[in-house]
Length: 337
Image 1 (spheres, rainbow, N blue to C red):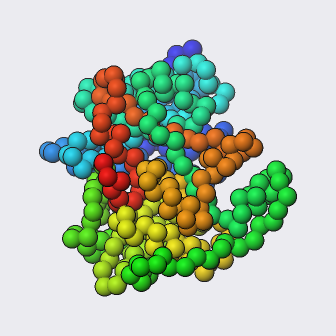
Image 2: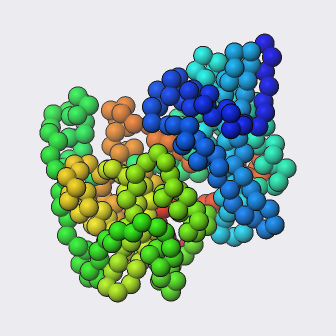
């Protein structure tokens, strides 16, 4: 059977959507969503870098696809996010995954640039063989009346699902509030003089508006975090999830307090935050009655953590120290590195 790997085309999007919805049973991904996501571009030096999408075909039609998204790093380099690597279930274990990944990584290696991804447990072996190294588990923090309530919902332990426990504003902190906004601009993200560090990936207005304002799939709620007279950062909610935030370390506990207050005010009974954060911030989650579900659920077989994985340019041995320092945290914090 003949197989070809080529650049994906706009005409392929309906077939890509069909694989995701009908074979993987993810019903909320639309053709509009993939057109938006695959349209991601950045400007780097004198070139415009676009999302690299590859499609695999055989005599039966589209059998797999993969994409690499370029992001501009704060040190001026480019790093690629490998995402949406999907093979039609009936065509797995036929080398299609390797063909797609080899083709993507060949282009990235030719540019001398690094890549990262988040891997499910079942895909770890495949990514390890391609030279990816696990940097960290991806913690999954939840806040519920009790973690036993979550187990009870899954028939694992007695209990009940009640309401989120309210918290109080951290002592000694300036009174902070959430103020909604509809478009990211630097004024409603943070004041320049108050930023305490930099993300490894540049998070500018263009990226944030593309990610959260023009996303055709989800309804995000965006808020500035205002403490006293100063804008300290922002937080983004989607349903019961804290999906993104940027705030100086000293105001992180206030952020969690405001998030809990937001969820309680909207009668949301469980709060989620899946974000890769340094260990130094884990205690603040616990203090704010969030638990790491990846640890609590593991003995019951309810959750296996995803891992963040890094591959250095041309598969050079060992991870660059900058990745050891950078945990892809969604908060602008400094743990003393």
